[in-house]
Image (cartoon, rainbow, N blue to C red; front, side, top):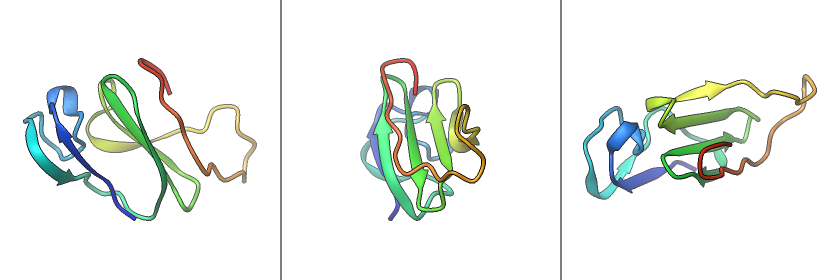
Length: 88
C-alpha cells in the first residue's frame, strides 16, 4: 500500500520532494505498507502497518518525515491518524 498525491505542490504538499504542482497522481516518496492516510489544509500524514506516522507538506517539508507519537504508550502501534485544518 502506497500513496500518491496531486494538485498544489506548495509547501511540499505532494510529498514527492518538490514544490511543483501536478495534475496527475505522483508517488509520495519513501512510504509503503500504509494503514491509513489523512489530509489537512496544507499537509498530509500516513500511518504504516508497523505503527509509525509520517507527515509531509506545511511545517514538515516536501518529503515525508516520521513524527513522534506524543502521549502514546511505548510499544503501542498507531493504526490510523486524522488531520484537521492545521493540526494532526
